[in-house]
Length: 505
Image (cartoon, rainbow, N blue to C red; front, top):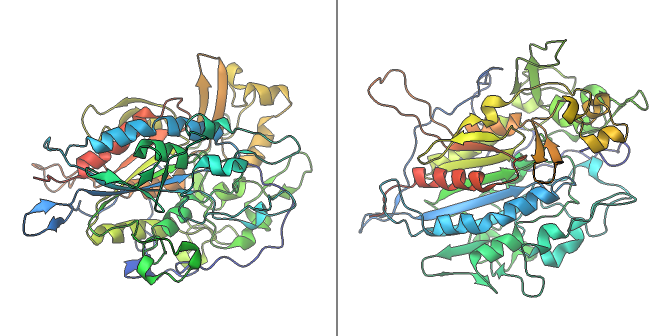
């Protein structure tokens, strides 16, 4: 979204988990990522080269393998996400039911032992501070949000002179009189019960899930994910925690041997900034068509972390786009230590290291891609038509959507043109939502290059040297945030989990 307010006197970058260094680790988790130069091409997504791991047995005497699942939701809480949060929350009962009745790939009941933690995409940014801020604005920075949305309804009012208010994103799914909440920083359930007060795990997730619409418009879901999974964080290491704000925590979210599932839901490009000085520098800014000057906008997030090639001038379509490291002056392919956004290798390195410690890791992205039109009939039910296969990288186009352009009808009627949207985002929409029942266009989303790069690194490709065996393992599923029904995304998430779980008996 467009940045709120003018430029800032930017503070130094936040130093967390070794930011600013290409080689670092925390509690044995290596964050160096792949070697420099191992980037994906512009036309093909990168894939991991790590063999799939199996869950270790929790009880070596019985041989029963772990049924533990740790599920992290990173949910965009910026101003355009109210309807999407409601859509997601309406599908949470199906998610809980599918986890509770989960079977492994041999048809054996798993009896899942599940932790579910929720955080936001808001890691803070100097451009998100100003006179408009609410007095109680505090970015989550990857920490768990563990209170019911009815207790934070002020989060569902946006900014501006006539702010959007979308409290129904909470109130339609969470009982305002008796909300269901977990007793811990996360929801837990297993065949013997749950830690939820006032309802079921599905009720609690519906209350926790909606995050509001007043978060920072420079979304950083990858960095928020990393901090949520930080092994040293209080919610993952309560025994080592000396922060009184988290003194109530008794059990960690992350557990040894558990399958780790991550779901990222956002409608914009990842903006996990390593060097906040770029928020005041024109290098990655677009020209504001009103002032004629380069000004801050969400285009910084795209321009600072993505490189595209093969632009066709007549159509505005690119041959391809890929994540890359860029330096402060825009140089492409700089070292991790010189990159202005945190390199995607930082996040791939964390996930591969967690996988190397004995966890299987899977990821769902509900992102700015065209709607998926077909899925595989068997787990993991990955998209096989539409979605990423139909994604086109292009510049914004006039006129409005019904006439073949990219501008939503209401915006077109208000005088918004493609040059304005190009300034705001730096790239055209990956998808446009439409509700045929009401004949209403519901919103648009930016293509997810950096998140896609991290997600697809979890896949294992087939080894061409072993013609008789197919080693392909799908561990990444990308669905469209423009879809008016997120149930296929939930099925893909549980399909990934089912495909990764080993037999339990």
